Amino acid sequence: GCGICVKKCPFDAISIVNVPDNFEKEVIHRYGINGFELFGLPILKRDNIMGLLGKNGTGKTTILKILSGELIPNFGDLEHEPTPEKVLQRFKGKELYSYFSDLYNKKIKVVHKIQYIEYVSKLLKGEVGGLLKKVDERGKLDEVKSLLYMDSFWNKDVSTLSGGELQKTIVGAALLRSADVYAFDEPSSYLDVRERINLAKAIRELTKGKYVIVVDHDLIVLDYIADMISILYGEGGVYGKVSKTYSTRVGINSFIDGYLPAENMRIMDYKIEFYLKDITDLDVRKDVSEKLLWQRMTKALDSFSLVVEEGKAREGEIIGLLGPNGIGKTTFIRMIVGEIQPDTGVIFPQGLTLSYKPQRIVPNFEGTVREYLEQASKDILSTSSWFYEEVTRRLKLHKLLDSYVKNLSGGELQKLYVAAALAKDADVYLFDEPSSYLDVEERYVVAKAIKRITRERKSVTFLVDHDLAIHDYISDRIMVFSGIPGKEGHASSPLTLSKGMNMFLKGIGLTFRRDADTGRPRANKIGSYLDRLQRDRNEYYSME
Ligand code: ADP
Ligand code: ADP
Ligand code: MG
Image (tube, rainbow, N blue to C red):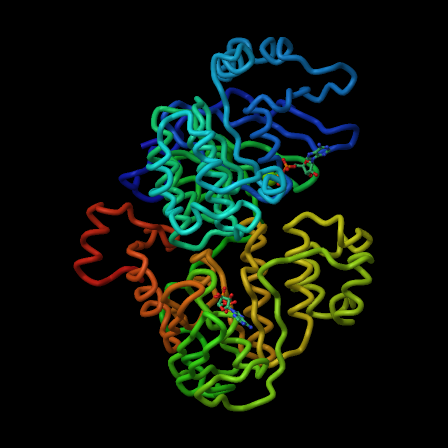
């Protein structure tokens, strides 16, 4: 073994793939005086997909810009213009030399899928199929179309696409270009669970023999897609360091543990833990009453119809809603709180109050974060309150108080809106994709806050999220929505975590196992031994 694993060496772990020589000490790039500093670069290997994992503001996008030649690193020297010659001089004799030499001499070509795809949609005009045909330098149009399941919007105009459709179009365009290096910055944003796995498969299929680097915060996606992992750690907005290269499994597990073994470095002050129990603390408590119940309900809207099986929710319960976009999750909640009336079926009690964090977050507030929070609740800003400690500080909102809401990054805005929704005292909470734009650590901080407040207030929270690990972590039960998005939806009764996950994953044809050391869920490769075994046993979501 490599001497890193405390326990037995797991079969798929060769812990360190390669070790950059002394890079951790070297400033690669600095943005201005007192600006952010990046230390180290990951070392790409042909035919190996590098996953980049780390918190927001630690330089992941900066790395992609450097590796794609869009940004020439200045090594901290702000007085002189950076040049390719200086970069090659610095890397002489090091592993990165040949990469940058080929890059700057145009021997290798890079395609870079950028993080914020909203910008791209304004530049593109025309139908999806026609646009992709134009960029198809590899003759793989049909393959991309089928691997990414693009049939339903192939003839749509780009300006009318949903976020998920746009993401697939842009990833598809990147894969159709002929290049030696493919860089993907947060490709899973806006996609549902099945689309994420399809995306991971498409990237793996179509980048064989290439250099590939993927930044993402969904551990399941990263686990599925990457052959090796580099972790970015440090202080967001201040500095970021690139870790040594780990095998995917060890890299993700070390990240979850908050400790990098090869560099003997603690990167988080706590561990992310996975609850494996199908029975939660709510089930064992004797004092838990029912908060709401509904009969089997039906509702017909213009061209969409929904059937919801009967169910109940207990005080303090978190119910995860799983299913694709446009399948009726929001419609269901709107019926629960009486915003719309079901055609058949009764809800009890009536008149419950709702606090809602919508899916799309738009910075439509003119003032500062402080002003925004003041109007939401006094508690958020009162430094002596529990809420301030658990939510405001944990989400690091206290550092943003004087920033203008419209200048916040996507992740900062998400945290602000989640905190504001939590601050409102309500019977029912609906969080629609609270994890988008958040890094892994922030996702768990947000999840913990949601759970704690729901329990304390004896409210009911409905949680919509496409990051399965989050449901695993805080949902008490699961409702599965299936059907045809935009046409007809069917919602199950609330089910136990294992039954719900099983039903959902069976519906989308995926099986998940558990990591032996951390318990985190891992998607099985389709057709692998465990995949076949679990299918035979009808165990799509392993609890052990
Ligand atoms: P990540 O992708 O990990 O979230 P980025 O690479 O986008 O991080 O940014 C790292 C840090 O560098 C951030 O704090 C960001 O504000 C800062 N930064 C990014 N681009 C610039 C720039 N062009 N000028 C000054 N600072 C920048
Ligand atoms: P989800 O929350 O699962 O994304 P929604 O409940 O928001 O799905 O929407 C389900 C479907 O119902 C969508 O096709 C949506 O366009 C349609 N829909 C939602 N509200 C209305 C309405 N008031 N009138 C007509 N159609 C609607
Ligand atoms: Mg980024």
